[in-house]
Length: 201
Image (cartoon, rainbow, N blue to C red; front, side):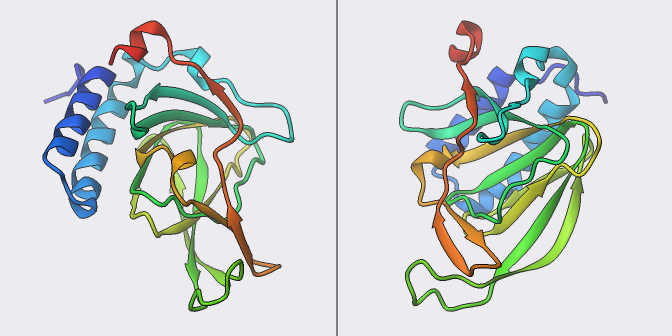
């Protein structure tokens, strides 16, 4: 049966119920990707062009549109848009994360930390694999997973990001493989305020 009625409001209601039940990270990583697939399948009913505006300033990162965030900064849901060639450094999130493709294509690279974390600011990471993200893809990762994203296509890529906590309020870090360093990492970019209707979800 085709699922055409799942809305952003319903997605948030499901996430809130999971939070009320104090679902573990493992439970969230089991359930939320299924919810993400449902909302992606219904994207024609809620995804608007204004939500997919890339950020063309080189000093910023992606175009970021906030769909929802709880007052305590939990259950943050964003639409993120990358220009061709845009790439993030390797980073973790400090919270569970689910990324689902909406439009276009980009590549998710997986990384592994190789040092023991004993030296502040020092980190050795190496790339361990990659995975394509498109409208048929959903990627789930625990808070300590390290990844990077690269729009290696010739078109804009648009993805849905769901986080247990807005990553600007977690101890998220970025890694520099060449310099073997790590540092705090914030989402940055252009955050577009949610519309009144979205804010009521």
